[in-house]
Image (cartoon, rainbow, N blue to C red; front, side):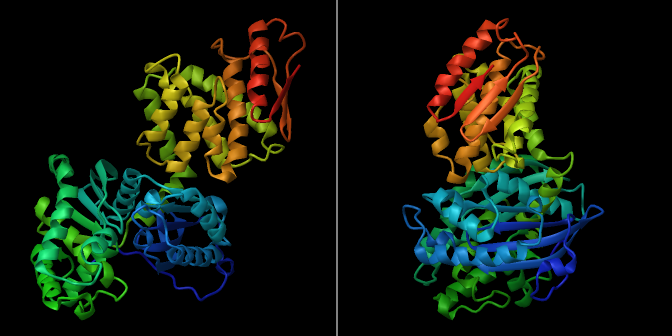
Length: 515
């Protein structure tokens, strides 16, 4: 049934440290709209070997009301699951763990408050990724594990709250979309009381087609030689066909019609028994079947192979890339710099000064973290990205662009933090922007913003290098700069700018000294 296979090592319920987990072990946590997944794997010679897996049906999307507020019951179920995952992750290096949230968390109202509780339960930060970033990671996982490396393919993942569609060749995704239609959402809308009928399926299939139709043409232009499905919905449908004698190892269009008729004949979910479909999958079976029928019809698919590999494995490979020269986030930043004709030489000068300041105060200011270091570096490179739109308010335009751009490798919260630094690198300090960040980020974000502001100020004359040594010290809410003797007197504009900066930083309680 699956297009790939991965070795699985079954471990007894013990601390994973007993089994020699080391720097070559990585973990991905996928907080999906229907289920939460954890996979722990060892990376060796370009391949992953799965050490442990954990899956819990949480039904996060089903716990959202019409205002996208999460019910207390589902919230507690999610937190309990994350605490269990956290126990398994305790022995892994923190940099080797990545937890991502998808559609339901994207939609969640008041997500910062829930995320803080969730991160405490898991013991690690959680990134809410955009739909197209989710699609990129899904394709990355499928392509890395696919036996046909250079084949053109259409990859589809039906999740609880969204459906991701990607067309590509080899490791490169040429077209990717995330659509607001998922098996949990559709099942809740059309089959919430459990009743099954031709009329209800017709309405559900039509709703799926309306969501999918706008992107069909752009994918047909790409073309593909193989259609691959991944996700719990795809695997359960394939199993149902295999065990029901409708297919040998794949999803077939005629098999979907047979499953549809079987569901209609059952008249109610309580009467529906489909071989290969577990009881915890049945509540979302009708919604998933409706989406799959719509996809097969609109894309004229007759047969689809199914892969065990999807988002989680893509996250693992992305993690490995971050620890090497292949960090996709660097590629995204470079693309933005090129697209908007940014003065990269000036950006690099600001970056070098900002990183010099950072290294001197990171420990004292408690900002020694890859997230803060990387974000400061990227923000220095990108701080003038809005100049092509307007000079006077370029920091505001640049922040909007970064927050809303499709930047591969970046979680939504990372882009918001990056945008905050860009809008906050000059003029009055935008206190509200920083105060709206998750509480754990507010203080360190302000501090790295101060470093960026100082670096940009010192390079206001667009000098290639500073003609002075800048020593900096920080203690609590105070930061002090020390220049070579007489340098400030010979640079009166910089001295005036620093005095203005004192006033602006005073509004956030930071005292700037210089001599």
